[in-house]
Amino acid sequence: MSTTVEALRPRTLPPWGAVRHDWTRDEIQALFALPFPDLMFQAQTVHRMYFEPREVQVSTLLSIKTGGCPEDCGYCSQSAHHDSGLKASKLMEVEKVLTEARAAKAAGATRFCMGAAWRSPKDRDLETVCAMIEGVKALGMESCVTLGMLSPEQAIRLKRSGLDYYNHNLDTSPEYYEKVITTRTFDDRLNTLSHVRDAGINVCAGGIVGMGEAESDRVGMVAALATLPEHPQSVPINMLVPIEGTPMKNVQKIDHLDFVRTIAVARITMPRSMVRLSAGREEMSDEIQAMCFMAGANSIFYGAKLLTTPNPGEDHDMALFDRLGMVPMPG
Ligand code: SAM
Ligand code: DTB
Ligand code: SF4
Image 1 (tube, protein in one colour):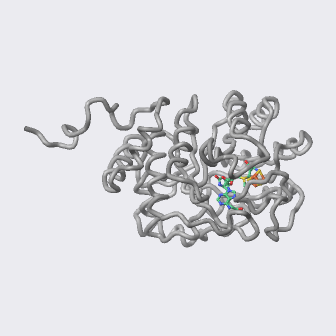
Image 2 (cartoon, protein in one colour):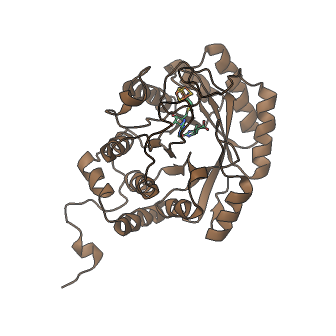
């Protein structure tokens, strides 16, 4: 009798790599519970069905409006509710942003992501951001912005400027959300995502792990993402960067292998999405990052700064790619 892996799999499971929107929490929990080698094998198998496994997409991030945010997100250095010591600043000028975008392009980034510490953009500021997007597109780069909640009209305006991606994270499970943020709801987040989708902009939505959540919250977060009407084209998985002065400064650090598991489960449940190994790389060894790539991560933030916190420098990342025989994804 055959004892191949295929023969041992329960007949009721759909084939690996199917693009499904009906994932149940039980199924996702079962993935998290797999022995690590089995989880990695499945994630790597699915990854190879849709992607060239040596390639990693590189995006550079710039904070175009820093600090003073009215929202109370418990993890964030930029919330006016916490005393993180960060100096708030106004929206940057378009030309200064484009100077940074040119430098990012010269360093090898193919996507330029601009973040603003807003609850939602004012229409006048949105016009300035649209000029930035047009400038980034004129450089031949992909554009992404993250500006907080949007109305349907604002999403359409962004689409008209040529915006490629809008980042808006679900961050955690619906149940844990109010432990992290009280100034908006999980449903507010879902509404903005639907406006972005309806406007025809690619969605970038993921979350944070290591905020003191239970594994069941990681299950709930992946379930919320993987059951959206369309999988987000890009799924950033951040590891909490603990910030002085925030309520999450002293939360128990997550086991890095549990972070790798979250990447693997995101890869398996959203097979065609780019999964981004996002914040937290500065804390991780090169070996853990390599495991994240094995688990199906195929995108990173590239450049020595995220929004307000440090990230590995370009040289370090290029050396790591070389050591792993990996390459930046062509734009
Ligand atoms: N204000 C907008 C918003 O909240 O959507 C855009 C900027 S916000 C800083 C973008 C995302 O960065 C958050 O949703 C969160 O997932 C991530 N983030 C912020 N601070 C972080 C931290 N300390 N550690 C890890 N991820 C963080
Ligand atoms: C995302 O998921 N992570 C990025 C981006 N989208 C905007 C932000 C990470 C921020 C990390 C903390 C900081 O630098 O302030
Ligand atoms: Fe504001 Fe975004 Fe930070 Fe929340 S995560 S405090 S909305 S900048």
